Amino acid sequence: MFRMKEDLKRELDLHALKEIYEYMIRRSTKTPFEAICKEPVCDWVIKAIVRKMGTYWIVKKYVRSHNCIVDGFRTHFRKTSSVIIAELMAPKVNWNGHIICPLNIIEDMRGEHGIQVLYTKAWITTQNAEHRVFGKPLESFQLMPSYLYML
Ligand SMILES: [Zn+2]
Image 1 (tube, helix red, strand yellow):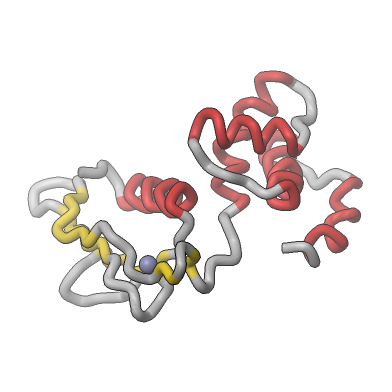
Image 2 (cartoon, rainbow, N blue to C red):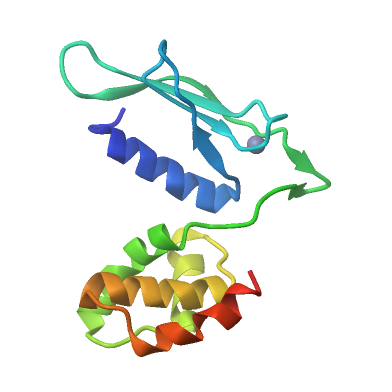
């Protein structure tokens, strides 16, 4: 049960990060919220409806297992949302009052959230988190294109 649609999406984002898959939201007239795995062959699905009296969202259907895994790998997985990682890390940037480094992110995400983050991804996340906290892109942003190729 979720208070708002945003909570539901956020939870999905986190779950997708942990389990390493990508989902997409399907427009449906019958179900107000329906998300499916980006792999067309996959049966993973989550459907949620909003309660009649109120704004709570209830999960109506949830097929937990992904059958899009081939030899232990998901075929199309490419990007992990650095935005959501930045969101998780932003309070720390703020709290410490200094710029976090990618290695901190990798450690923290593994330790606290059980999420594996690649160095390049972590680096971009630092930019994202700093931007979120300090409100402007830093000069180091210009270094990014060379890293983007490695993704
Ligand atoms: Zn899947």
